[in-house]
Length: 182
Image (tube, rainbow, N blue to C red; front, side):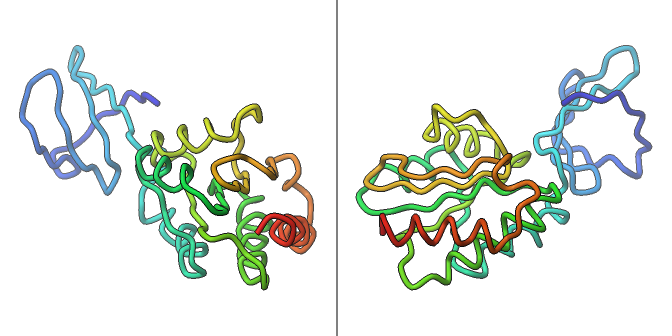
Protein backbone atom coordinates (compact mmCIF):
# COMPACT_ATOMS: atom_id res chain seq x y z
CA UNK A 1 0.00 0.00 0.00
CA UNK A 2 1.61 3.26 -1.11
CA UNK A 3 0.45 6.82 -0.54
CA UNK A 4 2.01 10.17 -1.40
CA UNK A 5 2.02 12.40 1.68
CA UNK A 6 3.68 15.51 3.06
CA UNK A 7 4.71 15.39 6.74
CA UNK A 8 5.52 18.15 9.13
CA UNK A 9 8.51 17.66 11.41
CA UNK A 10 6.18 17.30 14.42
CA UNK A 11 4.64 14.12 12.93
CA UNK A 12 7.92 12.53 11.92
CA UNK A 13 10.07 10.63 14.40
CA UNK A 14 13.10 9.44 12.46
CA UNK A 15 14.75 6.18 13.54
CA UNK A 16 17.26 5.79 10.70
CA UNK A 17 18.46 8.92 8.94
CA UNK A 18 19.41 7.55 5.51
CA UNK A 19 18.42 9.95 2.73
CA UNK A 20 16.67 7.56 0.34
CA UNK A 21 15.11 5.19 2.88
CA UNK A 22 13.85 6.17 6.33
CA UNK A 23 11.95 4.19 8.96
CA UNK A 24 9.67 5.92 11.42
CA UNK A 25 6.55 5.67 13.52
CA UNK A 26 4.08 8.37 12.46
CA UNK A 27 1.22 8.52 14.94
CA UNK A 28 1.60 4.80 15.74
CA UNK A 29 1.58 3.68 12.09
CA UNK A 30 4.58 1.47 11.40
CA UNK A 31 5.84 2.50 8.00
CA UNK A 32 8.79 2.97 5.73
CA UNK A 33 9.14 5.66 3.09
CA UNK A 34 11.35 6.87 0.31
CA UNK A 35 11.95 10.45 -0.78
CA UNK A 36 11.44 11.18 -4.47
CA UNK A 37 11.51 14.77 -5.72
CA UNK A 38 10.67 16.08 -2.24
CA UNK A 39 7.58 13.84 -2.07
CA UNK A 40 7.50 11.16 0.57
CA UNK A 41 6.34 7.77 -0.74
CA UNK A 42 4.90 5.97 2.28
CA UNK A 43 4.67 2.17 2.56
CA UNK A 44 2.54 1.01 5.46
CA UNK A 45 3.66 -2.24 7.07
CA UNK A 46 0.20 -2.62 8.58
CA UNK A 47 -3.07 -1.45 7.11
CA UNK A 48 -4.38 -0.27 10.48
CA UNK A 49 -2.87 1.32 13.56
CA UNK A 50 -2.46 -1.13 16.45
CA UNK A 51 -4.64 0.94 18.79
CA UNK A 52 -7.54 0.38 16.38
CA UNK A 53 -7.25 -3.41 16.15
CA UNK A 54 -6.24 -4.12 19.76
CA UNK A 55 -9.86 -4.30 21.04
CA UNK A 56 -10.73 -6.59 18.11
CA UNK A 57 -7.80 -8.87 18.97
CA UNK A 58 -8.83 -8.86 22.65
CA UNK A 59 -12.32 -10.14 21.81
CA UNK A 60 -10.67 -13.45 20.94
CA UNK A 61 -7.60 -13.53 23.17
CA UNK A 62 -9.69 -12.98 26.32
CA UNK A 63 -11.48 -16.30 25.64
CA UNK A 64 -8.31 -18.30 25.04
CA UNK A 65 -7.20 -17.64 21.48
CA UNK A 66 -3.46 -17.23 20.96
CA UNK A 67 -2.27 -14.65 18.46
CA UNK A 68 0.08 -15.80 15.74
CA UNK A 69 2.31 -12.93 14.60
CA UNK A 70 4.80 -14.78 12.37
CA UNK A 71 4.71 -17.51 9.74
CA UNK A 72 6.83 -19.65 12.07
CA UNK A 73 4.21 -19.28 14.84
CA UNK A 74 1.54 -20.53 12.43
CA UNK A 75 3.69 -23.47 11.28
CA UNK A 76 4.35 -24.47 14.86
CA UNK A 77 0.66 -24.36 15.76
CA UNK A 78 -0.65 -26.21 12.71
CA UNK A 79 1.87 -28.96 12.10
CA UNK A 80 1.48 -30.97 15.28
CA UNK A 81 -1.04 -33.55 16.42
CA UNK A 82 -4.43 -32.60 17.81
CA UNK A 83 -7.07 -30.11 16.79
CA UNK A 84 -6.52 -26.43 16.07
CA UNK A 85 -9.20 -23.81 15.42
CA UNK A 86 -7.97 -20.84 13.35
CA UNK A 87 -9.79 -17.52 13.03
CA UNK A 88 -8.63 -15.05 10.39
CA UNK A 89 -9.73 -11.90 12.19
CA UNK A 90 -10.65 -8.68 10.40
CA UNK A 91 -11.82 -5.11 11.01
CA UNK A 92 -14.90 -5.53 8.81
CA UNK A 93 -18.43 -5.39 10.10
CA UNK A 94 -19.17 -9.07 9.53
CA UNK A 95 -16.19 -9.94 11.73
CA UNK A 96 -17.50 -7.68 14.48
CA UNK A 97 -21.16 -8.70 14.29
CA UNK A 98 -20.85 -12.34 13.26
CA UNK A 99 -17.41 -13.98 13.19
CA UNK A 100 -15.89 -12.96 16.53
CA UNK A 101 -19.11 -13.48 18.51
CA UNK A 102 -19.55 -16.91 16.85
CA UNK A 103 -15.95 -17.88 17.61
CA UNK A 104 -16.41 -16.86 21.26
CA UNK A 105 -19.64 -18.87 21.55
CA UNK A 106 -18.07 -21.93 19.92
CA UNK A 107 -15.00 -21.69 22.18
CA UNK A 108 -17.34 -22.22 25.15
CA UNK A 109 -18.61 -25.53 23.71
CA UNK A 110 -18.04 -28.58 25.92
CA UNK A 111 -15.95 -30.19 23.19
CA UNK A 112 -13.45 -27.75 21.75
CA UNK A 113 -10.10 -27.82 19.93
CA UNK A 114 -6.79 -28.41 21.69
CA UNK A 115 -5.60 -25.01 20.46
CA UNK A 116 -7.38 -21.88 19.29
CA UNK A 117 -5.29 -19.41 17.31
CA UNK A 118 -5.91 -16.20 15.42
CA UNK A 119 -4.20 -14.12 12.75
CA UNK A 120 -5.28 -10.61 11.83
CA UNK A 121 -5.82 -9.71 8.16
CA UNK A 122 -4.18 -6.41 7.28
CA UNK A 123 -1.68 -6.63 10.12
CA UNK A 124 0.84 -9.48 10.32
CA UNK A 125 0.97 -10.30 6.61
CA UNK A 126 3.41 -13.22 6.81
CA UNK A 127 1.36 -14.98 9.50
CA UNK A 128 -1.90 -14.42 7.62
CA UNK A 129 -0.43 -15.62 4.33
CA UNK A 130 0.95 -18.74 5.98
CA UNK A 131 -2.36 -19.54 7.70
CA UNK A 132 -4.18 -19.09 4.39
CA UNK A 133 -1.70 -21.42 2.68
CA UNK A 134 -2.87 -24.20 5.00
CA UNK A 135 -6.49 -23.43 4.03
CA UNK A 136 -5.97 -24.18 0.34
CA UNK A 137 -7.81 -24.87 -1.95
CA UNK A 138 -10.14 -22.28 -0.39
CA UNK A 139 -9.41 -18.77 -1.67
CA UNK A 140 -8.16 -16.16 0.81
CA UNK A 141 -10.95 -14.49 2.73
CA UNK A 142 -11.37 -12.56 5.92
CA UNK A 143 -12.90 -13.18 8.19
CA UNK A 144 -12.57 -16.93 7.87
CA UNK A 145 -12.51 -19.88 10.26
CA UNK A 146 -10.85 -23.25 9.87
CA UNK A 147 -10.54 -26.41 11.95
CA UNK A 148 -7.51 -28.63 11.58
CA UNK A 149 -7.00 -32.14 12.92
CA UNK A 150 -3.48 -33.57 12.97
CA UNK A 151 -2.38 -30.87 10.52
CA UNK A 152 -5.17 -31.51 8.01
CA UNK A 153 -8.00 -29.09 7.21
CA UNK A 154 -11.29 -30.74 8.22
CA UNK A 155 -13.76 -27.82 8.34
CA UNK A 156 -13.82 -24.37 6.74
CA UNK A 157 -16.10 -21.33 6.99
CA UNK A 158 -15.43 -18.61 4.43
CA UNK A 159 -16.48 -14.97 4.47
CA UNK A 160 -19.48 -15.59 2.22
CA UNK A 161 -20.75 -18.10 4.82
CA UNK A 162 -20.35 -15.47 7.58
CA UNK A 163 -21.84 -12.38 5.92
CA UNK A 164 -25.49 -11.87 6.72
CA UNK A 165 -25.77 -14.90 9.00
CA UNK A 166 -26.45 -14.61 12.71
CA UNK A 167 -23.54 -15.35 15.03
CA UNK A 168 -25.51 -18.16 16.69
CA UNK A 169 -25.96 -19.94 13.34
CA UNK A 170 -22.22 -19.77 12.66
CA UNK A 171 -21.44 -20.89 16.22
CA UNK A 172 -23.79 -23.88 15.84
CA UNK A 173 -21.95 -24.85 12.65
CA UNK A 174 -18.61 -24.63 14.46
CA UNK A 175 -19.85 -26.54 17.50
CA UNK A 176 -21.05 -29.33 15.20
CA UNK A 177 -17.54 -29.53 13.74
CA UNK A 178 -15.99 -29.45 17.22
CA UNK A 179 -18.29 -32.27 18.37
CA UNK A 180 -17.31 -34.34 15.34
CA UNK A 181 -13.53 -33.76 15.24
CA UNK A 182 -12.43 -32.79 18.77
